[in-house]
Image (cartoon, rainbow, N blue to C red):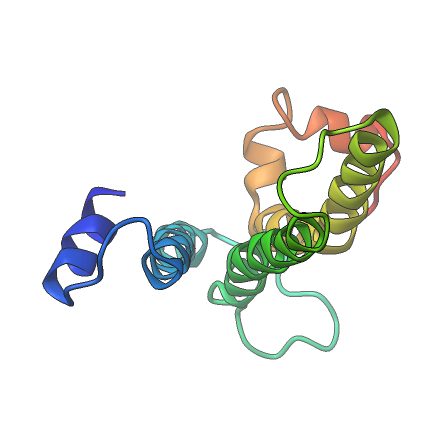
Length: 144
């Protein structure tokens, strides 16, 4: 966040504006993407690349995952803003609305989560961390 705020002040965007908020969102996710690309590019790929992949991933799945999260947040905020504007102000969050939000979250991470986990698993993170967070992936029966 510190780097994004410094950049935003450098380009003279005023806080509390639409441009400031979403420029900061994309900058933060771009920085996160860059960090994950560096980490992923150092993976050993102990079992080689999957069939049909002739070059190392080099973080391309990380780009898709992290930048799509920023896009999803932007789209979600836009839809919520549209409904808030059409109802003349903020709506109270009802149980169906909360359930819809949770379904959206599960659907979105179901569609994009493989981009985060797949590249890391093929790169050898699964073997190195077999006794930690990836245990839940195997427990759920997800195969990569």
